[in-house]
Length: 153
Image (cartoon, rainbow, N blue to C red):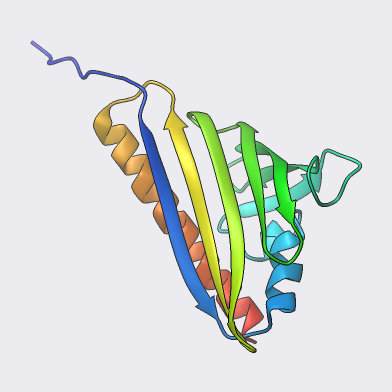
């Protein structure tokens, strides 16, 4: 007899922070270019605008990953030079995904960048959800390391 695994909705957060030795303006220019992802995000093949708006609330992007998966994201909050928040509307095994990328200058040439997200899954087992959170955490970490390498050149 196979023991059935209880599937339910799960809620969690992923938060990663990195310090980058460069100016706040340089970091903001890079992260606020919402279609500039292929240069630093792991496994992203291309990113295109789905909106007339290129930044600020209402800007929409479509991210295509190396495996062909596509995720549509909408910017829902924006404070120039400080943070922006976006929601994924399609492409993830989730009911809700809201993420914020924020930057804080620590000194003239040291910036702390935080990427934090709230996640609510579609029905899955506890283990599937835990694995997903671990995957997201390592995806954020690897991408932030790429960003740091790129900006500290």
